[in-house]
Image (tube, rainbow, N blue to C red; front, side, top):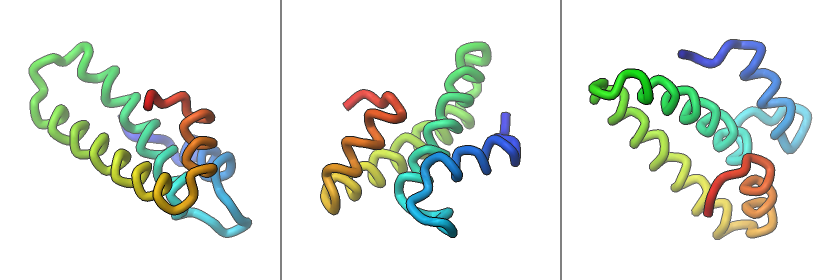
Length: 89
């Protein structure tokens, strides 16, 4: 269920803003989106896993806060990340 090290490095490489960037909002949103997708698939088969459901809701909230911050600071970067990750908004 966890993201593999190679997949995480690939996501960081795709969404980073600079050479040594690993913590920009874009990278964090991309990593959270991947984890949210995996956890959503898990919950489709394990419908009574309420602890994981709570974790999913916390991740979605964290991603929402990061997206709101990005929208407030630089709207163009917000639109780009929404488009690249195909997130509804």
